[in-house]
Image (cartoon, rainbow, N blue to C red; front, side):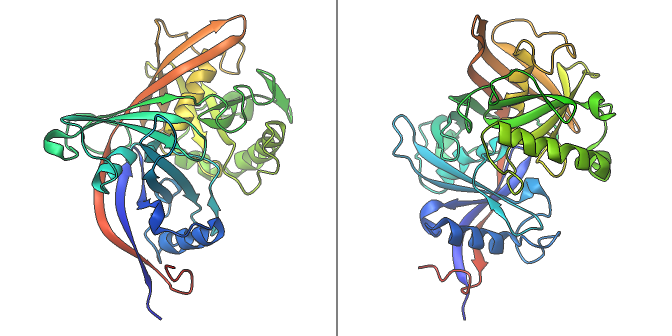
Length: 363
């Protein structure tokens, strides 16, 4: 039986990588779609040897694009996180790094016509409802990939892509502080459960007997930490109104520590069953908001940034990421207006990915 060919663009977006599809080229039914993505990426084996996944959570991500019917938006971005080894697909979260490639991919796919030397694309995140403006370089009507912008965790430099995130507070749970409290105590550990672009359960590294400066590999080898962390994450998910999250990557988990390289704060971000080698874009927005929220778990770990909007520099295992936060604080606490980040992306390949016809016959 012949295989089913599905057109795709293969892109690096920020510090992640994966296939970008037109949504219309994939099955509408989510159960069938999940089986197609598992087959395409080779989920179920740690090297993803029978697919185009890269054997890590940051390289088994998928973007699906279509023209948007949402007022004020140009493109719908539907994200899927495919597990490396478990053959599972999670459609609940979004990914800001993969979002970095949505603008270029939309132009490459012919969904968007460049507007001149600079193109602004308004993106609707289907998973969370957030709206993001992407500003990319398109001289001569072509996406420019070469430039001088550098990202920690990505070799070399590339053309800058500016992302301005709006409407990201309560992206999944409907509120900034999803449990109703700025701090909770779960299994003896103080945490802040916050939802800005991504629901995260945030704790201090020191409360787990860690420095917060461990490498991603050192943390992944520390299975005792994961055994301690996961029950806390599960209970945080329940308290945040997300139900049973034992098979979901949401909420994520993060550890904070004082900065040591001139940044605002140090963070380790978990996806959640391994440590991110850098930092998620969505996670960075939530952690920056945690830093600026009075009474949060971050209080006392840093020197508050000056100015408005505030520049929050988050140190991570491969360097740092900066988030520009436009916010207000008053009687009602922290209010986020928008968060901006600089990212880069690059088209790596394009063509067709093949899946067995027994998984999907293309009809």
